[in-house]
Length: 279
Image: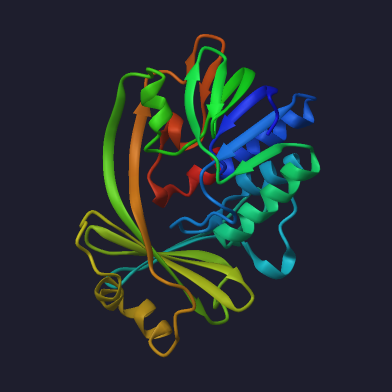
């Protein structure tokens, strides 16, 4: 860990890594700190819209072709009505496992000289000095990218965080050939399941619901078309869940030293697919 840096980034998800890469490419010294060990996984739909893939190209991040799938649009379906389908007008998106995305961002951060401190914690911040695992690190600026439940957002005194909506998400992968190059959104009563191709032989199926007690398999059975497709397929990952919150933060900077980014700066409902692109 550097004892001094221009930018201290707290949080090593896509938002923190993207910030680190951007700053390093501008000639700033960057230290990124995250208590997790890579690759960092998270329950999400794993689809990146065209704006997100364009941002990755601008960062110089390359997704491995064998571990992703091009996405050409969105297809909304329902058990009880006609469906709606539309192609992206600004190029393809990408379906990619969260761990693959994280590895690609991490590799690019190493390439541009970011000091990555995995398995480390920021214990305290006083003015422009942080204590990281008992060691002092002086910085000029700090970017807070520790997610929607950001602890440092509260500790640094960012006020007026408004929770607009809260839902619950679950995700599982199936080893099978994708049947479409579109993201499928299956619409139900108070819940949606969406399907994202993430490789030539794998799909991600995610559930979004307002019911915190929902069971993934029970919900899947209510989507008859989708359930029929995966009935004989074996899952190839463990079920993973998380909270999907829509939050608004009144301000995202504090003085000239601290800034919030990613879900720490406010978050959108996962059904929009915008969260990762914004990050």
